Length: 614
Image (cartoon, rainbow, N blue to C red):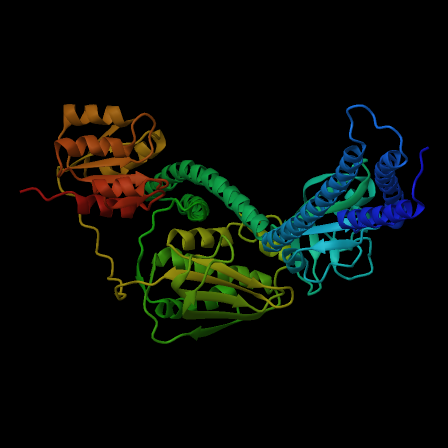
C-alpha cells in the first residue's frame, strides 16, 4: 500500500517555499508580491512533487512490496531527490547571475546618462526638452540658459506673462503657440531652421535659429519635444553688411562707367567752349558761352563726385597738415555757410601730417559743411575738430581697419538723423532734401574718398542730438611741405610734333585744335592700331597723347608696344576714370591727365613732357 509521512511532506513544503521565495527575491527585488506570489507557489509545487515522489518510492520498499525487476527503488528515490535539489541549485545560481547582470546594466545606463548629460552641457548649441502636452521644461543645458538669459528647468513654454521671450519685428510679445517647441509637443510638428527674435530679461534682442522635433513612445504618441537653437545675430549683421557692400560696389561700377562716358562729353564741351570764347567779341555772346562753361563745370564736379564714390578717380596723396588746411578753409566756410551758422575749431596740437589728396579732401570737407548748413536752416553751430586716434575692429563697412589714424570731424547742432536715415545716409543719390535741391552724392563722395585713401568714416547721430561725420585718414610717414606756387606754362617748342589717339571724335577734335592753335604739329588717330600705324608711317613724335579706355586696344597696350621699341618715348595718358593704376605705374606713364581738364592744364603738361631739341 502506498503511504507517506506527513511531517516529511510538511517539512519539504516549508523548505521548498523558502528556497523558491529566496531565489525569486534574489532574481528581481523590484517586482511586487502580486507577481512574485504565483511564481513562488508554482515553484513550491514542483519541489514538493519531487520530494513526495522520492518518499513514496522509499515507502514502497519499506512496505515490503516486491521491487521492480532490475530497478533499485532506493537509488531511484535518491536520484529523483538529488535531481530536484540540483535543479533548484541551478535556478538559484541563474537568478543570482541575472540579478548581477541587471545591476551591471543599471550601472552602465547611469554612466551613459551621465556622459550624455555632460556632452549636452558642453555642446555650444542650446538644447531644451519639454513634456507633452503641457510644455513643462524638463531639461535645458547651460548654453540654452546663457542664450535666453534666465533659468529654464521647471518653467512652462506656454507661459506668456514674462516680459522676456519671443517677439515680432515691432517688439511685441509673440504667442506661445508660435514657438517651435510648443508646436512639437502640442501638435507633433517638426520645425527646421526657423529664425526667431528673442528678448532676454536684460532687454537685449538676439536672433535665434531654431529647430524642434517631437519625441514619441513605442506606440507613436508624443511624450516630449526637443528644440535646438543658436545665436545668429552677428551672422545676420555680417550678411546684411555684405549685401550692402555688394550693392554699393555694383552702384560704384555703374557710376564709374557713366562718369567715364560723361567726362568725355564734358571734355569736348568745355574745351570747345574755351576755344570759342577766344574768338567771340560780342559781349552778350561771351556771357552766354561763359554761362554754358559754368554749367559744364558743375557737371564736371558731379562726375568727380561719382568717381570719388566709385573709387575710380586718380588721387595724388601727399602729406597734409590738417590743422593748416582747416584754418585756410575758414574764410571759404564763412562765406559759403552764411552768417547764421557759427563755425568753431577744436584742433589738436602737435598732429603728424595725414596722407591725403589736398584738393579732394577740401572738397569733401566743404560737402560736409554744406550738408550741415542745410540741416540747420535757422542757424546753428558747426564744429571742425582734429585728433590722432587709435581704432579697434570696425563696427561697420564704412569704418576703417584697426590702427592709428588722423581724424577730422564735422559736427552740427541740427536735428540729427533717425536710424532709418542714418542707415541709408551713404547710399548714392539718397537725399532727404526736396527734389532738385540735392544730388545725394555728397556723403557717398566723402566715403569713396576716405576708402580710396585707405581710411574710412564714422557717423554719429541721433534724433535731436545733431550729426557728426568723422573722416579717418592714414598717418603720413614724411612731414608736410608747403605747396609751391604753380610755374607759368612754357611756350610750345617750335616744330614739336604730337600724336593724339582717342576713340571719341569730339574729344580728339578739341585736343587737336587746341594743340594746333598753340603751335604744335598735330596728327590724330581714332584707335590704338591706327595710332601705331601713324607712328610707324609719320613718326617719330615728340609726344604721344593717349586715351586710356579705347575699344580693341587700350592706351596701356599702345604705350607698352611703343615703349618696347623706344623706352624713352614721352607718353601722356588721358582718362575719364582710372581702374588699372597698378599697370600704368609699372609702365611709368606719369603724369596722368584726368578728364575733363582745363585747356591750360593740358598745355602745361604737354610742354613739360616734350624734351627740348638741341
